[in-house]
Amino acid sequence: MDPQFTLKLVETPQELMAAQRLRYKVFVEELGGHGHLVDDENRLEKDRFDPHYDHLILIDEALDADPIDKVVGVYRLLSSDKLADVGQFYTENEYDLSVLKASDRKLLELGRSCLHPDYRGGAAMFHLWNGLAAYVFENNIEVLFGVASFHGTDAEALAAPLSLLHHRHLAPADLRVRAKHTSFQDMDLIAEADIDRRTAMLEVPALIKAYLRLGGFVGEGAFVDMDFNTTDVCLVMDTTRMNEKQKSIYTKGLEA
Image 1 (spheres, rainbow, N blue to C red):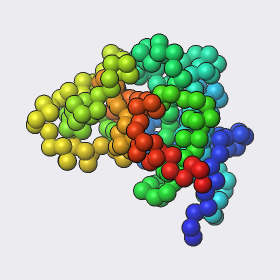
Image 2 (image 1 turned 180 degrees about the vertical axis):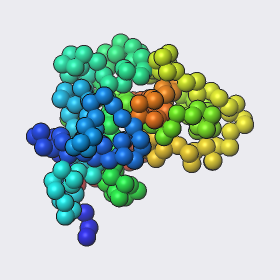
Image 3 (image 1 turned 135 degrees about the horizontal axis):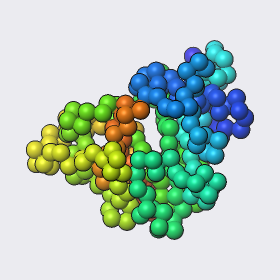
Image 4 (image 1 turned 45 degrees about the horizontal axis):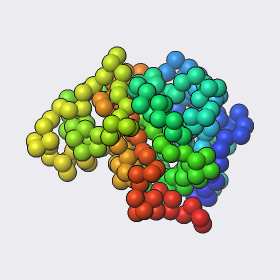
């Protein structure tokens, strides 16, 4: 049966739990992560930031399942004009965002992005992007940022893709956030001339590659997250630097 997608912002506690259920499936069951507020009994991945953020969810109404299991895609969003309600961005646990926060530009943090395994590589991600694009335009967002992850914490195993990102996609100075020293992992591990670029790019997760195609950059250094069993990079995207082709990819279907 073809999916019947509904895209919306969470409005009820039940919808938030459905988002947290998908996050549990991906981040805990699939990737082996965990956190202080994870609810294993009810299979919910949650943290103290959730009540303050907007949650964009993609629902497949065609699924023969309980409503809590019909959410197949999630984005967690916080714009800088709501930052006072929270006190900090989630990303500030891992990265120094001073350069962005001092810019006086309208910022949007993207986090907890995930898709159900059965919906990867299809139309679901584009539906989420369309919803994200609408949110960006409606809220006059100028700079998007957030962490994205490589599975595992062995920097040596990730040396090629991390080095490729550092050499080819490092953010310009006005966007260059930096991983915090507590878990800072240098990404300049292999000289650019010695990288097998094709092989290295194949090792870059699809979500990171998607943002690079849209003109995104990475911050300086990776952050090793032992709780979530990941090595994180911070992606930063300036909407004013996107060319028309990139904008058309990002907003495809928005007017439909």
